[in-house]
Each structure stands twice: as C-alpha cells, then as structure tokens.
Image (tube, rainbow, N blue to C red; front, side, top):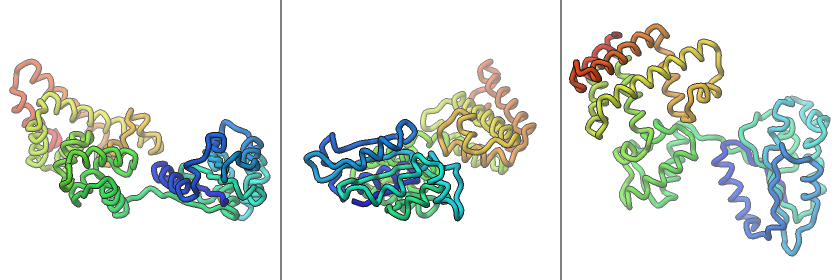
Length: 330
C-alpha cells in the first residue's frame, strides 16, 4: 500500500484521512491492526517496527503517524534538504524506509501547516502521496461554505455565506458547527443572513464591530442603527455600552502589542480570545487609531456608563450622546 502525507488545515486534513481510510478499507480493521503514533512522544524505531509488521487476520495494517513533519520544521530546505533530513537521524530515516515496507502496510503521516521547504516533506514526497490541505480564503472559502451546507442537506444564500465568513473567518471547525445548527434551524428552506444573525454567537459582536467602524468613519446614523438593532433584539443599553467599552479595551491592547512588535499568531492569546474574527477585526480597527485617541474614547464610554448608573441620563439618551461623541472624536 502507498504511504500518504496529509498536512495543512486541520479540518481538511481530518476529512482527507477519513477519505483515504474509506478508499483503502482501513476503517474496518481489527483494533490490533490500527496504530496511532504521536511523533513527539515516540521513537522512530517503534513506528518503523509497526510499519514493518504484517497484519494479524486482516489484509492491512494501518499506522497513523502524527506530527512527524513538525519535528523537522526548523531543519531548513534547499538542495541539501534530503541530506539534512537524513543527517538528523531519527524520523529522517522514514523516507528511505518506505520502499522496503510490506505492501500490507498503510502509513498515513498527518501534520498541520508546515513550510514547503520542510526537509522531511521534500524527502517523503519521493515515495509517498502528498496531500496539501490549504485553508480556503476569499471566493474559495465561500464555495466551501456553500458545498458544506449542501452536504448537510441545506442551501444557503450568498448574503448568508458572506455573513458567516465575516463573523467566523476561515476557522473551518467553527463554520462547520454553525452550519450544522443553521441547517436544522432552516428546516428545508434556504439559510439566510437573518438566520446567521440569530444563531451565530459572533453576530452581536459583529454588530459592535460594525458600529465602531461606523463611528470611526464619521457615520453616527449607521452606528446608532446597528446599536438600536441590538436593543430590538433585547439587549439593554448598559450591555451595549459594556460591549463598546470591551472593544475599546481590546483596541488599546492590540495597538500596544502591535507597536511593540508582537507577532499576529500571539495576539489572540495576549488578548484573551481564540476567535480569529475578533482578532482580525480588532487589528483592522487598531491600525486606524492611536493609543491617546483610544484612551479618550474609552474615558467617554466610562462617563456614559456612570451617567446611566447614577440616574443622570436615560439609558437610550446616554447611548445616543455617546455615539455622537465617539463619532466626532469626543
């Protein structure tokens, strides 16, 4: 059986591995003929011994090797990539061992994103089927969402596709989970953007982001319309002000971190969120505002919150005044 290298987006990688197992019949093997090995927690000799063993009362022996490419991700590439992979010993021996493995062995090597110059990837490509599962973006992501909805027995409108990709981004695990809920909710009709706003948890955050965008662009009417929509959905003015306060706090943190040169993959952790949507939108807004400007706006939000709690202003009136002040740079 051939060896396979499957790497890239973790959702697509998992799908590709399931597909390979289905095509080869590896999904129905006895437990004793199925092995899953984490490269970081195992020795190459152990994995190679499994690969060289004949199956017991089955036609195949399946060995899934996870994270082996990552062990040499910093080894470098170039013309001598194959030599460097082998020179490091250990997992570098895999490339040469594959042709000698029994035909009854199905080896699937699974990894996340690695560089194309990864020396072990280059070496393994000579005797393995390589499947790069790139995370879709742009129009390709929209097409993926459409196909994924159809696979769940649902259809989805273009505005709904745009809404869910804007809110969730290309986190395919989250998009798939949300499509599952939306397909059940729509119950045979098209999934529309109203459904997305009603069910996807990022929808209210999206309204806050859009409202802050409108304030920065000097469009108080649009900002107020978005915030009024939240009120119509049952959110109190104090909650909305708290959301704006939170967003300005994230903006200040994002501005400070980027000014200090913190890399984007680290920003989400420092900001206390695992939402790609929140990180992307916050970074986009922070690029157009200075720390002193963010600080002034944040102080104005605190004053509005205090005015409501002390009974000096009606909540709705305070929210309208806040929008006007923030839009004019208050």
